[in-house]
Image 1 (cartoon, one colour):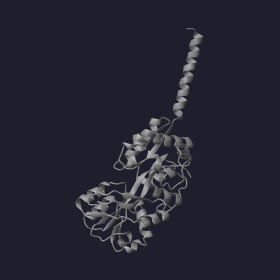
Image 2: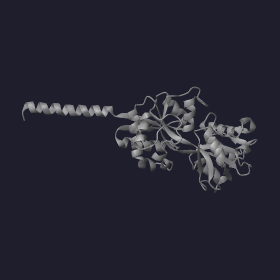
Image 3: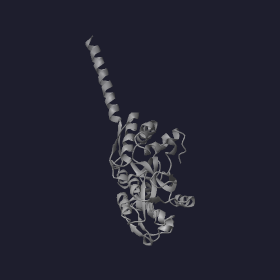
Image 4: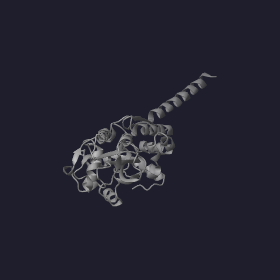
Amino acid sequence: MKRKQLFVIALTLTALLASAGIALAAKAFVSIATGGTAGTYFPIGGAIAQAVSKAGALQATAETGNASVANINLIAKGDIEIAFVQNDIAYWAFKGEQMFKQPLTNVRAVAALYPEHIQVILAKDAGIKKVEDMKGKRVGVGAPGSGTEGDAKAIMGLAGLQYADMKVDFLDFGQTTTRFKDNQIDAGFVVAGYPTASVMDLALTKDIALLSFDDAFLAKLSKAHPYFVASHIPGKTYRGVDNDVKTPAVMAILVTHDKVADDVIYNFTKGMFDNIADVHISHAKAKEITLKTALDGLTVPLHPGAAKYFKEKGLSVK
């Protein structure tokens, strides 16, 4: 082979390698803030990262996180590209309400995932049939400044109740169930996807009930606070709770910020939903993630990249 031909081949190979390197360098990397390893956000986030990476346009990784409030602060600061949050936390962050002193208006929605239910646990002998019956009772309202506390305040406020009307304790999930076991509270708020392990454990050792809300209250609640959606917990989810329980839920959603490029969020959303079957096998709650409900309960503006994908799929995007 002539030297000139060898030179041409070498130049061609160099150009091919260079272009491959450019393509590799151009591939975007995104991180997803999830939750603790014992919760639902972490395994589902890992499965979403794999689904997105499988599609090829992006390389996604899931990271442990400190749940909704911490995650949305990471997003607002631009420290991460995608995060799991509850839609009530997203709403308060965008508006600058509850635990947020200033509006975080750069937060954008990617997709709704699945409902996380307001589970109002009751001691069976507490005599509580509706929210108003909590007056004068011992009530656990969630950890101070948590999403659970914010939800409890919204629900009780709609019923005309204030903390002064009750004996309030600020308790996380574990503390709430412990107080029930020790007969120290009459009602306690837990916000989580069912079945919740701590509630299952409690039901094995103590007779409990769950507060069932009537349709009128649920409709009024959703109108006053748009982050709530009417839902239910099936009977026999917990021992001794045999009938379906009507209750509000908030949505677990994915959020990003307005500086993440449209094509990145488009490819992320497409990769997730095009491979959603892979996500479904990661966790029981993941089976509830569908394209049909991807816009349910979104409380912050939709990112243009996600909106483009949903429009392509025939969804009505406002």
